Length: 220
Image (cartoon, helix red, strand yellow):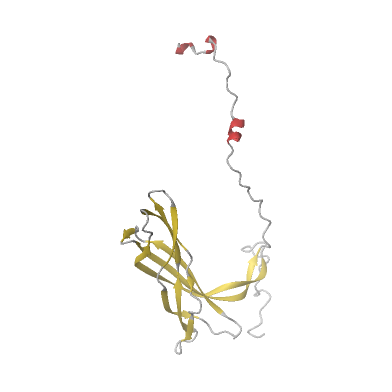
């Protein structure tokens, strides 16, 4: 028997296994992460111009997911490190700043953008057939590091950005599975508060004042 042949006892089976009850083997097509790494960026002074026709105060800031700027990815294989490449790209992160006018209490939104982030890193990108394509994808988590302050017509604050960079390839995987997902439960309808519901459930009040014999004599 060759080394490539397996006995029937050696073959992978998900049936009759106490650790995989009722599982069966399924092939699925998924995006597999071949390599990932993390980095962080800190911007000590981000300046956003604010309108000069009112007295505004900071309310909130909402960061959008970072994205790799189109046509900025450059992948260069490293000659002395097989399956590793130098990966360069630029990242854009936008945000929405919410300010409230202290006068009329109106809230306005201002679109902004953090300074571009330049990445120049080494990543594991294994050799593959010409038709197999890897993707470079990122995930970001941005957070405010200081309370925004007004300074010469600008709102000034610090921002920290956590970045995860991934090498992703679309592959077919064999996984254990129960079956297809069951039907989900019915959606819950939104019902606005109705004051009449509480009124309908309230006990009926006494219509007439109490008589003398109905009153606790200890209170007299």
